[in-house]
Amino acid sequence: MPPKTRPRKPDGEPNLLHGGKQTDTCPRCRFPRNKKDKGKGKLLHGIPQVTDSAQLRNVLVTIDRNLREDRDLTNDPAAVFMMGVLEARIGGREYFLIASSGRTADPWIREKHLNGISYHQGAWEPVNPVLPGGHRGWLTVRGENVDLDANTAGVTRPCSAMKLLLGLGGKRLEWKSVEYLRMSEMVYVGPEADDAGMRQWHGKGATNSWTAHSCNACEARIPYLICDVPANRIAD
Image (cartoon, rainbow, N blue to C red):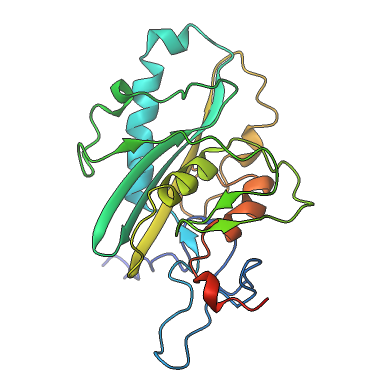
């Protein structure tokens, strides 16, 4: 009789966190990100932490496949960039955004690279906002202005995670409630790319070996951008 096997436990934590854990202190409002409002019992932060998901990782797989079949792109064997996808449900409405980093002003990902996405087919929106030129003048996902730490290294790096969060903030949504916000990233590296600086962000997920984690500059910037505590609740 074959020995009994225990069912596999679900993973104890998400595959990847972007911008730290919910137990961290927010650099913008200076509240712990899992702090609750004493009066209402709800979290002060609607987005205490940003995780990825299997569905988002599958979206990236489809985009990557389309990119590698694009002759215009494969003719540039030195191409290297990060691609990212974000999904959020805010105020009862869902948002699905796609962005790419890179050394060109134009985004790598175009409409033709979205073919075949089965998860929320037809709902994905490419975004490519211009990043601020320094630590001032950034935008939270709630659409409020915020200045980052002046000592943040790589503050102007045009990463896909920044474009996704700024793209959401630029919608100036009516901020009623946040059900979720998730984000996944993946590295595209051409066969002749100088990839030493890119592959270090590759393959540190607990359940997935190819999902990318955010770079140090993004890890420092994301906490400011996901803070949705209203400005009038932040002490001077």
